[in-house]
Length: 468
Image 1: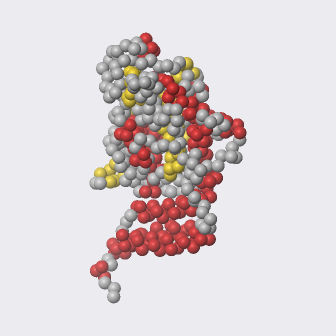
Image 2 (image 1 turned 30 degrees about the vertical axis):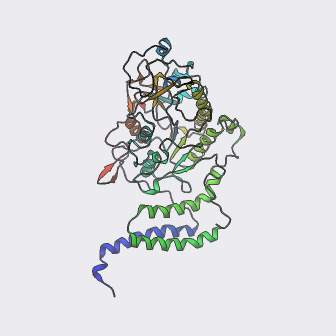
Image 3 (image 1 turned 135 degrees about the vertical axis):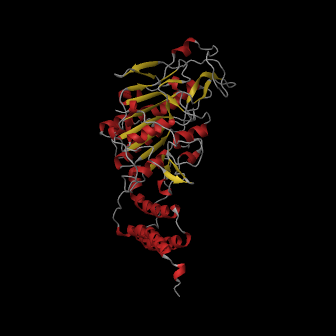
């Protein structure tokens, strides 16, 4: 018997709405590609330069005074007590000079360490920011801040925010991809996830070095006919669950994931296969050299993903057995040498390849870690000295995507410890990245727990001096 008071208009609309999840899944049976996800409504900045982002994340904290920010005072005062007030957890107050030589490159005359001979040839396409500032001295909280705009776990990553804002131009590929070379950042997937954003904005995480980067997605029994036979059943189960359990982004996202997985079975193996790339291209990325092969593959695949319309690609620097992360608390000279050797040629290859293919103008490439290092030495028994964490002044760089070319911006003090000229906070960097994608960072919000959240929280200013 029909009971009108238990099936009112609101419930009718509610149940109708949840039927669309099943319709989305059933549409796979047609065999035609679905259009790319529509972007979330938001106010856009006046101009749009970049379409995609490649974030080269050097997990651990690269030393700025040994890479892109030379400090002659460290050489003059090597071994002496530092003459400014500093805050160190483990390091001494003893000044430690850089063991590396610097040279000026390009028309812009940027100083670059001998550790980056290949990247140095690209400085005229880069904006080198020497005055980055962060809030946290510990790896976990600093990594979260750089990735999500907050030192608290549970917030959406930058890749998820950008995917939420702009959707994806790739109908048969994920819009947000993370590649790693054997190890995740210090906080693991916590810095890479979608947080409270709908699950469809989560990343696709894999290591291209694995024999089966995505698992066995083409099992012998998973024939096309069998999968299509399962789809109506899954659609009915989804409709039933939605009507019984109510709204669930995870449920609706699982439908989208089934749909994406169906398409990925043919697209992903092709995407991660670089055998059709010429020997010259593979050599450009250093794939023909054991020392640079791991990150070279990541960088080459990132270029292929940009060509296919993937929106955000996060590359985690590979694990180097001789150095581990970019976290040289000891053995600075040896560890940093190996880290830079593993990434220098692949990064330069990526920039040059993007530029040659006309993709650099619409691809924003970002390089950096969660913070920098101290000017003073950290001593560990039986090891050569290293450097401690320093979030008060460090270096990152941008290339392409509407950023200035051949610009060295900001400065740290004579010890490379504090940003003293044109400081750029992490929130400012995030605001600028979004602006280069055509997004007003103050309008990119998501309501959660009774308030509107955004990547830049209530902070951040677009750094117009960094824009082309």
